[in-house]
Image (cartoon, rainbow, N blue to C red; front, side):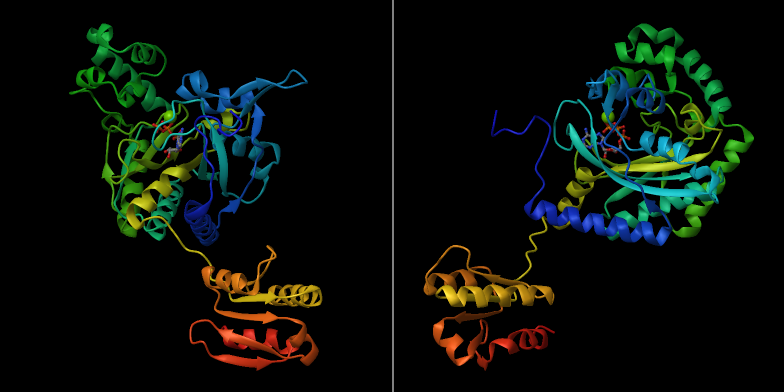
Length: 420
Ligand code: ATP
Ligand code: MG
């Protein structure tokens, strides 16, 4: 137990961490260019927030939450996704009182008690954006284009944007009735989950991965073909904006998304490179969510992407990122006096943004030079009593073997000049 991490978790380090950091940098860059500001909400919230904000009928709330009672007898849940906490903060911090829209992004751990498998963990991480205050298709277009740009800049090209519209609450109600009617003769053949969905949220039957349920849906009516005029126009304008930006998509009537709160636009970016869990990013419009969480009616659109799945896709396309910074200079030393001078010098070099290393192992001179080679140092030197006495050191260029005589004070300047 002691040396086994809990099931479904992973340690992030090495080349994986390199790819992770590249992703974070790209996220920060793109969100800045799109005018989205970062928000960090707590890792845990009141359980009720997720019951409301994610929805009682979802897999997440029914089966997957890490919930516990704290010492003060409060019902607490580790966040299973990023949106609910952001909505809570939007309301609690009265961000609606600022000039709208409010545009936020987050990078956060998320926790779901699921069966671990490739691309599915119990602690995973999400990137997401939320745009509050606009019900216009321009807002949907902005969020989708942000995702398209992000994927492109991450080098993820083998990915398709699937987009659909579920319509507003009116259309959804009407469509649910149509779908129920269509399935009414085959209720008994539905899987137990879909039987429940049939009563509570029929739309989500389209999401069922079960072969037999899928077969029943062969000629099913689709939400996008049953939209009211306004919802239809909204969807058409969004598609025309995507066309104008040169963002390719397929209208896919099977995209319904797992969470209850979606209205109108839903979309997924699906990768062809990473097998079954191919959705790297999903999102849509949720005009009812803020109200559901206790706020005034506020339109919103957003997306979430699993970081681990993005990285899987990046690595499938470009391989692991083995980048290691090369050491600029290794400063070896012999003796107690030289040790102090060397440490002061190493510190000075580092303050000048130079990557310097020295001995922490009490190695012999020969072993120190071997180590300098191993870490790929561009320059090296050895400081001993002689060098101190004569205030003269030899700096060796490890590649050309060229040697330069310098006073100790001159080393920083020499390195700054030669590293350009
Ligand atoms: P799935 O159908 O794969 O279970 P979901 O509908 O539960 O996905 P969302 O709730 O929309 O997914 O979460 C957004 C994104 O977070 C997903 O597209 C996926 O990339 C990622 N994700 C979801 N659950 C996990 C998990 N257990 N481990 C790793 N990534 C996950
Ligand atoms: Mg899931």
